[in-house]
Amino acid sequence: MNRNKVPFCYRQKSTLNLFCLNIPIKRIIPGSLNVICVHSIVLALQISRPWGTCQAGWRSMSNRPAPDMSSDQAAGMTSFPPLQTYSEEESMMREAVKKYAQERIAPFVSKMDENSAMDEEVIKSLFEQGLMGIEIDPEYNGTGSTFFSSILVIEELAKVDPSVAVLCDIQNTLINTLFAQLGTPAQKEQYLSRLSTDMIGSFCLSEAESGSDAFSLKTRAEKHKDYYIINGSKMWISNAEHAGVFLVMANVDPSGYRGITCFIVDRDTEGLEICKKENKLGLRASSTCPINLDNVKVPEKNILGQIGHGYKYAIGMLNEGRIGIAAQMLGLAQGCFDNTIPYTRQRVQFGKRIFDFQGMQHQIAHVATQIEAARLLTYNAARLKEAGRPFIKEACMAKYFTAELATLTTSKCIEWMGGVGFTKDYPIEKYYRDCKIGTIYEGTTNVQLSTMAKFIDKEYDH
Image (spheres, rainbow, N blue to C red):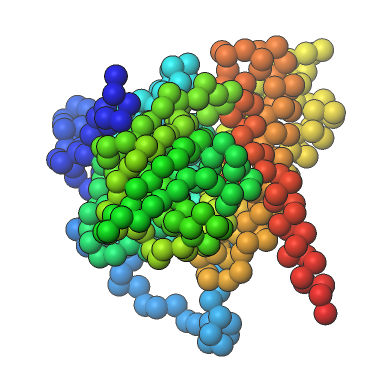
C-alpha cells in the first residue's frame, strides 16, 4: 500500500446545514431520524450555527443589540465572561457536540483502539459537522467561531475518545490557525476551503534529536532559483496517516535556528515518504508516523509566512496548543470519572454501596475538586488568549495541571472499579493508557514548570 496516497475523501457534497451539524441529506430520510438529527432540525428552525456563522452566511443572534461596554472595555481593555458561564451559543454548542460524540463516535471507539486506526466514517462525520474548521472564516467554508469554542469542542470529544479529540485539536489550533494568520490570499483559497471540508493537515516540527529542544532540528531547505530542496526526517507526526498537507519546519540557514522556515508540502509531493505508524501505548486511533523528506522540491510560493520566522510561529502555536492539550486531558479525566461513578453507586459490598464508604467519598470528592480546578485553569487560559491578553504562563499551568489530573483520575477510577476496571470490558483502562502522553507532548511536565518559573521570576523582578 502506498502510504502517501490518501485512502479516502471526506467531502460530502450533499449536506443540509443543521445547527452546525451538517447532516447529509441522505441521512434524514423518513423513518431514519435519530435523536441528534431531530434536535438539530428543531434548533435549525431557530438559529443557524449557534456558535458562529453558517455556510449560508447567517449569523446567530444577529438581531440582538450590542452589549454595553464595561469600564475595562471602555478603557481599551478586552473583557471576558466568568469562567464557568457560557454564552447561549456556547451552551448549545456543547450540548450538540456531546450528542454528536455519543451518537457518531462512541460506537467506534473500542474497535478503533483495537485496530489502531481511525474509522473513516468518524473522520467524515467530523467534517460534516463543521468541527474541522471551527475558527475558519465562512468565506472558506468554515464555522467562523472562536478559539474558546474550539477548546469546548476538544473537551467534549475527549470525554468520549481522546484520539478523536487529538485529530480535531491539531486541525483547529495548529494547522488552520497558521494558514489563517500567515497565509497569502492564494494559500488561503487553496487550503483553508479544503481544511474546512475534506482535508486533514499535519504539523511537522519534532525530530529524532530535537524533542523538547525543538529548534535544534536538522532538516534543511536549500534555495534553488524559485524553489527549495528539503532534506531531513521528522518524528512523532500526528495525523500523518490521513493528512493531505504537511507544514514542515526546515532550516534555510544551518548556522542557527533563525533560519527556520515553515513550508507547505502537499502529500503527493515527490520525495515525501510517510512511514509506518508507531505502535503506541495510548491514543492508538490517532496516527503518529515518522516522515522522510528526500530531495523534496517545494516552490517558493509554498513558504508560509516569512523566511526565517518559523521558530516564532512554532513557539506561538505551541503556546496556544498547550491549551488544546489541557482541554484534551480535562475531557479525558471527566469522561473517565463519568464512566466510573455510576459503578460505585451500584456496586454493593458489606451491605452498602461502595460509594457510601467515607474513604471512597473523600477520594471521589477530592478528584471531582481537582477536575473542577483543571477546568477553571483551562478556561482561564483560553479566555485570556481569546481576549488578546498575556496567556503563556496560564497555558503552561493548565497543561501541567490537567496532565497530572488525568493521571490521578484514571488511576483512582481503576482502583474504585477494582478488577473490572483492569479489563477491556470497561473503557477505564483505555483512558488510563491515553492519558500518559499528556505529560510528554507539546512540552513535558518539566518544560511547563521551567517556563512557569521564568514568568514568576520576572513578576518579582522590581
